[in-house]
Amino acid sequence: SEERSLNFIEEIIENDLSSGKYETLITRFPPEPNGYLHIGHAKAICLNFGLTKKYGGYTNLRFDDTNPITEKTEYVDSQQEDIKWLGFEWKNELFTSDYFDTLYDFAVQLIEKGLAYVDDSSAEEIAALKGTPTEAGKDSPYRSRSIAENLDLFARMKAGEFADGARILRAKADMSSPNMIMRDPIIYRIKHAEHHRTGNKWCIYPMYDFAHGQSDSLETITHSICTLEYVSHRELYDWFIEHLEIFPSKQYEFARLNLSYTVMSKRKLLQLVNEGVVSGWDDPRMPTISGLRRRGYTPESIREFCERIGIAKRENLIELSLLEFCVREHLNKTANRVMAVLDPIKLIITNYPDGQEEILHGENNPEADDKGGIREIPFSNELWIEREDFMEEPAKKWFRLAPGATVRLKHAYIVKCEDFRKDPEGKVTEIHCTYIPESKSGEDTSGINVKGTIHWVSTKHAKNAEIRTYDRLFTVESPDSEEGDFKDYLNPNSIDVIKQAYIEPYLANADIDSRYQFIRKGYYCVDKDSTSEHLIFNRTVGLKDAWAK
Ligand code: ATP
Ligand code: MG
Ligand code: MG
Image 1: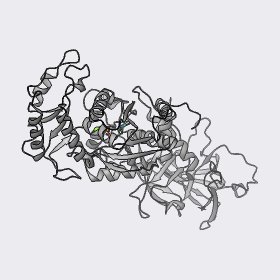
Image 2: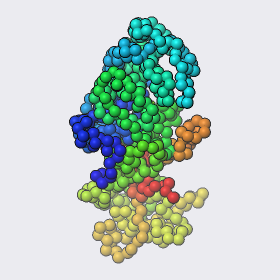
Image 3: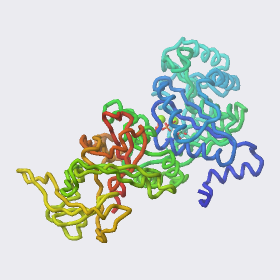
């Protein structure tokens, strides 16, 4: 919205644009294609694309695919789909792997400047010489290798002469820097592995620190925005740019999104998928964008959520209920209201002629400007109502059905409960009512006032539907920071399936992904596996925050 004050990144950008430091703002979103995007990525997407929407310029999509082992084309495709679904368009579609030749040349340039060397030490030996933050590191015995020898060895690393881990290329930076990252960081490692795009062309791969800033620079990214873990990497980011004498992209860091009752690392989400804890990356309980979409979230609600949480410089934990609030708000304005009975019990209207039917009319959405149009609702003498809307011995202030009580049937008539039937176990099986013909909604001349309105569907016209209700996937606020494995804190009751719910016939042909309010129940959307023979709805969110105290 227009009223909020600028966040610190916007302040930097406004200064850079008004001082003429840059003419065009260029940002990038750089996912690693090693999993599906999640709500944390949505925050980075909204930030990077949002900035160029606001200030002009453009945003690149760059797949940060320097790790051949974990990356897959399936993930590239899903990540693209999710960004588009969120409502953003990238300018250039790029892959860090497209820069492998250039990055190799950059490494050679550093060797030629005496700023990189091939180290034959093992990982343990390197770690042992690295020192501690308060104690300077010691030089590797290979640090003084000649430029010629380094050039030869690096070329042979590339040619595949050595085994994985036998040698690495390191930057010759500063072994006594208080910043441990600057103590001769590794820039290339040997990995005989097939890459999802470059195949077997390479057996050496650049490290993140050597690939990221240089890729930013090659694309003349002006503001390279990343999360706080990279604060200590910024010095190295600048060091490479300075010594390679390339375009000076600048890195800025913001606090990553942490969401309560959620884990967000792709590695952990992959574990949930692989171990069958969830049905897939798009399981409606997952914090992935595809999971949220299948759950019924709208792009607008996710963008609004990202806007509301803002951009911070310090880590914090955002309440999951805020995300739910945002979708509830948006669906309240956009979702058509319909009637669905989830725990059915039969109501028979004894004075409505058996076999007679009529069509009633219901407003689809009182919150929408055009009221969302009008739909037809068939009515007859036999209805399904919610079991919980009847009480044999009503509590105080009970305004729903009970022996002798009156209630309005939504969009229909006022009925009075005259009698009910029970089965041998004492479970109520049928409620018998009379209706008041002059009380039809919209043309009520009965003069009768009732306090309660309940929803219903005509048994003869109702469609059967499966309803899936979801709860939080974890039982604790921060599954990541608890003792033991995060999976010890899984909620065993995170899904509840109702096989036999009844819905209005209006919903028989509802499109996949379309969203509704089941009145008095919550917001629901049509699952991707739903068919006209077997309708399936996912509950997006309840009508109220069930967790509010
Ligand atoms: P993960 O551990 O979930 O894989 P990542 O940072 O390794 O996270 P990337 O694919 O490298 O995942 O992330 C792409 C971009 O999204 C990066 O710029 C990263 O900073 C940003 N990002 C990732 N997670 C979050 C988060 N929780 N909040 C904000 N931004 C995030
Ligand atoms: Mg990353
Ligand atoms: Mg990662």
